[in-house]
Length: 422
Image 1: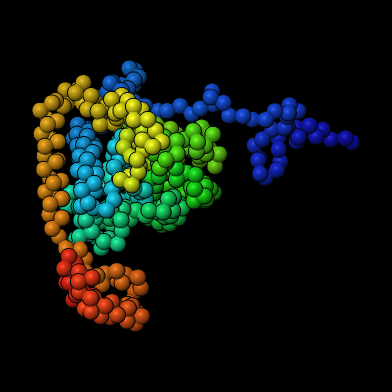
Image 2 (image 1 turned 90 degrees about the vertical axis):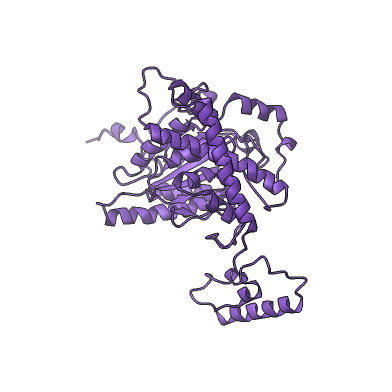
C-alpha cells in the first residue's frame, strides 16, 4: 500500500532550520527600506507625548527630577574635564554629549545589584548609581583615593561597590565578559529563586558591533539563554567611520534578530522611552528560562570621539551644530517637565550652578592629591607578592635613589618609601 508522504514534505526536517517550509519559488531574500525596524519613542522633540491615547509614563516626580539632574551633572562635568585635558591637567577624556539619556534612562530601570559592563561613554550609569564628584575626580586624576589605584586611563571607571566592572580600552571585550557573567548570574538565580533575580547589562557602541567579540557574545548568550541586556548606542559614528561605511544592514538591531535574540530599537534621545524599554527588557530577560535582549538606542555623537579626535575631519561642522539645535535628551526631558509645570528657568540656573560648584570643588581637591604609592603597580597581580616582584621593586628603588632628578616621586604617596613592598 502506497503511503501519502505529502504532509511530511511541507516543512524542513533539517536540524539547522526546523521551522522552514518548502517552496518551488526560487527567490533570494533581500533587505529593503520597508523592512527597517521601527524606533520606539514616548516623547517627541518638543517634550510632548506622541501617542495621545497612551497613559503618561508611570514615573514619580522625584525619579524624573533625579534623571534630569544626573544628565545635566554629567554634561557639565564633560565640559569642565574636556577643557581640563586641553590645559594638560589630565591626559585623556571622553564626553557623552547627546547620549546621556541612554545611560541614565537604562540605569533607572535596573536593580543596584545588576552587574554592569560599560564601554567608555556610560558616565551616566555611574552618576545614577551614586558616584560622587570626588569619585569621578579620583579616577580621572589617578589619586590615592582611586579604587583602581591609578592603573587605568582617565574615564575608565569601575566600582565594586556599585556593581560596575572596570572599563577597558580594548574595543568590545566587555561583551563576551557580560555573556559569561550572565550565565553565572543565571545559575545563581536558579540556586536562590526567592532572592531578587538579577540580569547583566552590557553597553557598547555600534562600532564595537563590528568586532568579532560582539558576534561570539551574542551567539553564546542566545544558545545558553543568558539573562543579559545588550545595550548598543548607535550614535552614527565609530571613531571616524560613518555607519554608511561600516555596515549595509538595518543597523545593529537586525543582527540581534539573526541570532535569535529578542530585539528592539529605541529613540536614545527620549530618556523615558529608554527607561520603559529597559524595564520591559529586564522582565523579559528573566521570563521562563531566561533569554538575552538586544536594545539598539539611536542617538547622535555631538562631540568628538575623544580628546584625541577631530571629528570635523570626517563630518561637517554644520551637521553637528544642526543636531545640537535640533534635539538632545536633556532638552527634550526639560521641555516635558516644563510642559507639566515641574521645572522652570530659576530651577535650571540653580541646578547648573550647584552642579558646577560641586564638580569644581572636587576637581581642585583631586588636582592637589598625591598618586597611589608606586608599589601598587605590583600589588593584586598574584595572591602573594612573588620574589621576582620584590627583586624588581628593589632594583627600581635603587634606580630612583641613584637618579633622583630623573625620577621625581614627590607626587606619589610615600615617596621613595612607597617603593617598598611590605
